[in-house]
Length: 98
Image (cartoon, rainbow, N blue to C red; front, side):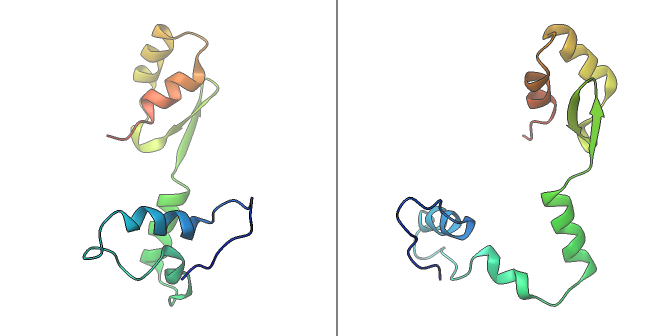
């Protein structure tokens, strides 16, 4: 478990996870945090999954960065035509996960 933090210190990822998990209710709360999995024996599938999750493949196009699995140049061009000069807005729309 994660102990108290110093006043003014930012919350660690484990603390944030635990606070969010507390809302699940006692019956659904698990006694672990994601950090518990860092000491597992190395395995290629787990490493690949973590890589995909935390560093997904991207494509740089017209000054923006887009997730490779969602990238289509004609779609991006359409969004840039509707929102010229708003690269961040186009990135947000194209990279949005439903």
